[in-house]
Image (cartoon, rainbow, N blue to C red; front, side):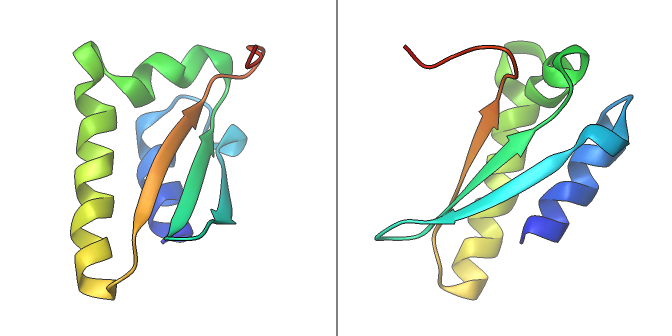
Length: 82
């Protein structure tokens, strides 16, 4: 699943070498954290979040087939969770 998300994200951004997908297992599924360069965050999120919503829809469809829950978190570099 991380390979799928990585390939899709690399196709969307200007700096594909900066795309990193981290996989973290939690109690009920897997959290995929997508890191891209600060200039490419808007391309991954899209207008009104449409691209991010589409990425989550793809993950949801694959989750049903694999019978495992996946969720997506798009990380904005340089911002801290406070």
